[in-house]
Image (cartoon, rainbow, N blue to C red; front, side):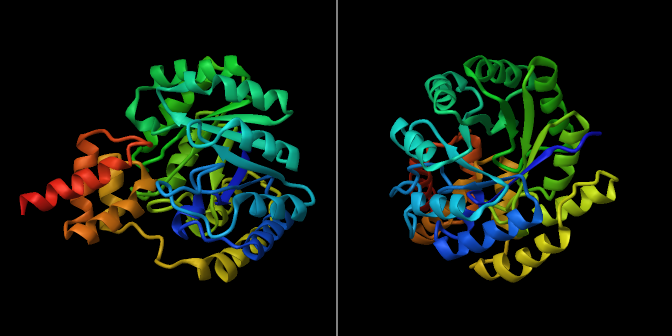
Length: 333
């Protein structure tokens, strides 16, 4: 088994868990430590990607380009990445990020909608960016469908395409089969992004690696949407124990996870009732904060809202359903 490239997305996926309140000082500290530890790619942006600071996605305390600039000015060796969701971000933000010195853009779409990403991949390559495709909610489609969608991204210029377990709903066999399907179809690299709603983020990442994943993701302390991601420091420890010499400084990662990131948590990243319900129902993890607010406002159970969203097969961009479901459930009482 080969050693995959590790992207730490504490400062992007982790933004969901802190309600998009990262400060420039926190970005500087975390990026400095990740860079010192040897992490090759560090992702920084609003949780919903470039231009994500909106009433629908949640406003950032500090402008995202201020945070991205802080990261770019801090690193000595790591690449800085950002997320881009077509329909949230536009070519304006993409061009600005490239002009600032961004290295990698990760273009994320629902896993059946790769065709909407063509112009963004083509522009990213024109701008000299490494372009990575994200097939979100990948648990909802069989491997053959994902492979066809990934092939479209490859034809648009993607350098890598990720299988993304946005709901933390996959089992190891799901991760393995989907990554394997992409490996058999593509000539470019394949990645895997895990969430931990079923307690399987590390296990699914290892299964993806066994299927040949070239890139994987983690976050310090597992900071991320829902029940969080594969913890970067744990993942590095596991890879080392597997005999894959990462060359990364585990002690630095453990220290920054414990001494810096843990203190940012307004609530613990655990598999509580709501997170388990979300993973079990296969509901997009970034919905959960909005679900909890709606549950409190209308006096209903968050897990009931999640279960109904799962029945409706809600996907990213359908956040308006959360209030509809909450009102409907409240009316049944």
